[in-house]
Length: 399
Image (cartoon, rainbow, N blue to C red):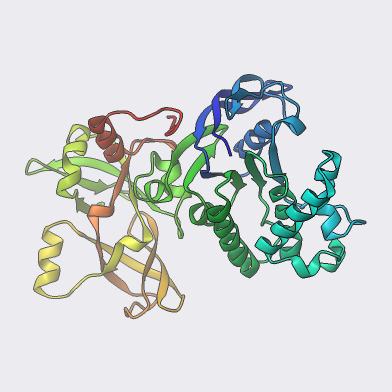
């Protein structure tokens, strides 16, 4: 096992195409880090540079106490699992797992011990004499992982290893991968485009866009305290609702006023939660984007409680368009007069399509972003500045 450090790593392809822009990241010894983002964000290129399959244009990559910029892939002491598994079709499972060790002239007895031990861990001992074509997709994936385990490398690299599996098998296999990491404690870098996969697997999640790390933090932090609007919208299912508007001071306290797309209908007002007020007072009169998770809504009470809630600026009037039952919960596609929303609420609430109703908003869970696709999280930035900056390699986040 070893620490992996990327320091201002860049990758520029011919034609001045910058795929990775000065990525800095420290991956601790035994840590499971997931790189996630949309296609073309630079995550796979970053992984391939760590593996030595891509030359780097600038910066340094260290594995353990050695800079590996010019070290051949086979000498980096890492093991990689590819999307297509890359198994030898003419070899048995046993021989697929043993092949790399044979090339390294490992004694036969040691090879046999490692292969059988890995097979036992992965539950593939009954398949050692089979060839890959006789295995299911999940079993082939286990063989590819087993081929890595037997090498006892300093780090595992996974390049979207579950993308060829069906939805049900993906869920069970990722649980197996997480259990495997807890057992082996090997430094792991995992690439995926699936944010749910990233959140369930990683000790830390690294969200990338345009070749830049947008945020690197625990799954809890990237969900509860997204660094910017892009991260807030990317992480979470269904995606975060984004409402354009302005901060105004009402009685000396900040409120969010929804931006009106039609002049005949004014935007609604939501009062900022008291704990967010210090961060937002300096933004009075300025445009911001309000981010509300679909899980932050519930149907408002009626009568006096409703009138009181409205006076406090905690409710939104919405028109229900589509209701999608999900068992215990349901997704509700709806709209204010100016913005479309998706809510995830209890299926026990009565909310038929076509109805206009009032939904209470948990403003303590609200996020506020500066303008633009990558506008920073105002409250999270305010709290971070008060607390002081952390290690830029461990907690890389770029504007």
